[in-house]
Image (tube, rainbow, N blue to C red; front, side, top):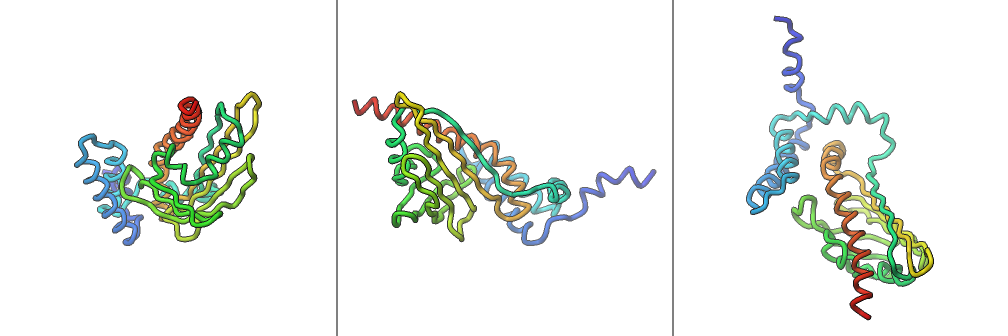
Length: 227
């Protein structure tokens, strides 16, 4: 039999994951998989990611690793950007002031547990981890603040996931405001992080979309309840 007939198997037997990455993947995968299986309503995405990480940790081989490395020259940035545009039936200044008070964010962002403002520019954020596992905590700072028009922020060094965001407020007249929201984050852990971010990205995108729609509903319904 020709040697080439065994090439797919031999290709999968080659290790392309370092020892540190294997340890992180094995422990992380085991945690996610166990957490997913013990829940009453199993989270398919969490179980899939856990299984994938456990496999790459045990086998020392990652099917996506080589593909990502081969495409590295064509990638200009590891950042993942999520953009949302929508119109909210509330005055522009009111929406800006509500968002500028960062403690309000957990009222409509389901994945944000709390935001504590330390001063006018610096705050501490707590969020639920990917797949609903664990809690992430980091400090952030306001980098752009144009009252009634623009608010931008970014995480400070030491954050578990480097992230940033901005929201632009545009007065459309007749008490309507256009919101342009951009949320970005950088995949952690190098190549393993890129792989995981690709798996989590659809879930994260849906989560951000839902949060922004929650903001629209909260502000519009909230005003009705106050009247």
